[in-house]
Image 1 (tube, helix red, strand yellow):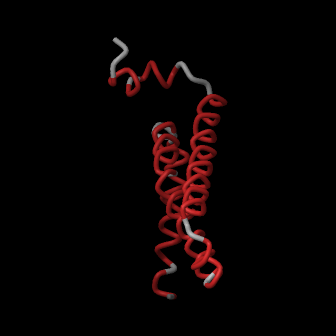
Image 2: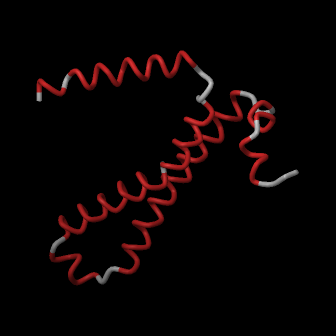
Image 3: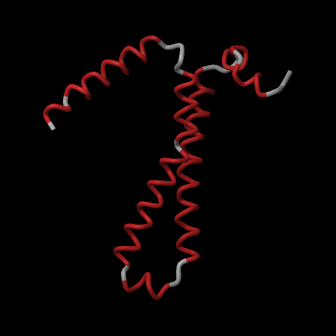
Length: 110
C-alpha cells in the first residue's frame, strides 16, 4: 500500500541511509531559501518605484522581514523532517535536553 501510512512506517525510513536523510533535509532548507527569495523578488516586482525610492531604507527593512518570515515559515517542514529522522537517537535528545536546561538556567540572569 503506497498511501499516506507508508511514509510513517519504519520500512520507509529504514530503507534510507544517513546520506539520503541529510540530503533530503538540506534540500528542504535550500527550497526554503529559494521560496523566501522568490517571495522577496515577487514583492520587488509588484512594488511601484516612487514610494520605494523615497523610503528605500524602510523598504529594504521590510524586504528583510519578508525574507526572514518566509524562510522561518518554510523551514518548518525540513526541521520537522530532521526531527522525525532523529526520533530514535537517544544521544541527540540527551544533548538537546542538556542544552535546553542550560539555556533555561540563563533566564534569571536576564
